[in-house]
Structures are given as structure tokens and as C-alpha cells.
Image (cartoon, rainbow, N blue to C red):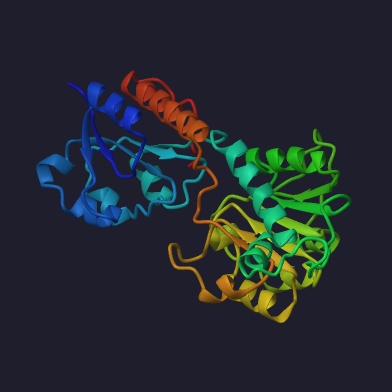
Length: 319
């Protein structure tokens, strides 16, 4: 008998059709995972063996407990911060992710946000739209410092962080990093704390995993260390940054600017951010490329096939 899959996040149409051709697929009919599971008839909930969803999808223990035969949770993307891992561990549920599938795409966006915020591209567009540019004879925007020679600090030198480092090197930036531990195989200097890294850096890129240990890791102390010429780029999860402290730092000039793809209370975004110069904003699209989606879906399929064959998962999350 084909295992039953609960598809709790959107996927590409080809992948959707592929899953339906091979497995029994139940699609979530409510926006929240809690609500979607609660809407399932008990007999259907009891049939579900596999859940496929983004790792940021909130899957609390109470909702997972209703899926009495659940054996596998496949996360689209590298994150798995929405899942109650303690519950999964207690029940022996295998949790998998796609650890490097979207790394290059997220790193690309990190550099785009960096260029946009440092070069103040939003203000440049507004300058054009206001009709203020009349060629060299007219009013000109003030020059700003470019990327060459800036010090780029990376918080979290995983797959995304390494790809950011490679791209930043092509811009002749100096690179340093902080992580859970030093990586002697990389040529970049390691800093023992985020505060030390921020004090050294001109730009701080946040690409760390979101969990209890990194909640508000970027706080007032870090932002003060980054300083009035510094920029913050966040492409990890919104919870890694104290958003209230960040807005205050931007409004008071404690830091120069920011590039944000993620927010603490998504999809809610503080309105003040739209009014500030040198702030680039995108709607959590770091991994939203065709290439990343294909790699993520291939990883999910490999984990499903291993599970149904009784084999170890290719990319298990440590529980």
C-alpha cells in the first residue's frame, strides 16, 4: 500500500504531480498546520505516515500527536526550527532537511541585499522617479563607500555562509566569521563571539541556524559593536535578530543600514523599516529560485524513498 503524505506547504506543480503519481497525497486545507491537522477526519489523520513542509512551518507537539502513525517529516530547505524536535525524538519520528539545496540562492540574495543597502538603491530609484536627475549638469547623489576593502563578518559559516564568503571574496572584501566552533579548513579568521566579530566588521551577515541558542543573538550590544558605519544583512531567520533593537538602531543611527529577507514576526514587518534610507527589504525569498526548488524537492524525494524502503535517511536532522 502506498504511504499517505500530508503536503503542508506549496511545491512546484511537476513535483506535486510526481508525488501524487507515486503516493497518496493529502493536501492541507487550512493556512496553519494546527488547523490543517485538526480539519482531518480521525481515520485520515491516522493514515498519514509522512509530512512534507517548509521547516519554518510551526508543527507543535499537540498537532503532531494527532498523526498517530507519523514516521517521517521532510523539510523543504535547510531549516527545521518550526518542528517540536523533542516530540519527534520521543516518538522516533525521523526529521530530514535539505541542508545545502538553497545555499547558493540564499547567498546570491545576501549579496544583492548588501549591494542594495550599501549603495542605497531604493533612494536612487526615488531620486529618478522624482525627476531630480538631469545628467551630469544636474543635481547628483552623494557618493558612498563601495564594497572593496570592507570587512564582512559572517555569523554562521555553514553552507550559506561559505557561499556568501566566496561571493564576497570576488568583491575584494575581507572576511571573518563566528560559529559554534572554528573551522580550521577555511582561510578566514575566527572570532570567539558575535560581539567581537561585529566590532571588527563593516558588514555583518547573519546566516546562522535558528534555535533557542540563537534567539536574539543579534541584540543591542551587537548592533552597538557594529557601529554607525556598519550594515546588517539577515538571510537566516527573523528570530535571530532582536527586531525592536534593530529598528531603534537604524532610526537613531547606531548602524548605517540593513538588508533583510526575514523578519521576527512574519509576515508582519515594522512599518518604520519602509521609511528608512539604506534599508533593503525582500519577502523571505532567499531560496525562491527554480534551481533551489528542484534541489530541495529531489532531496525530499530521496528521503521519502529511503523511508519507504526501510533505509536510513540521506539527510537526517540530529535529534
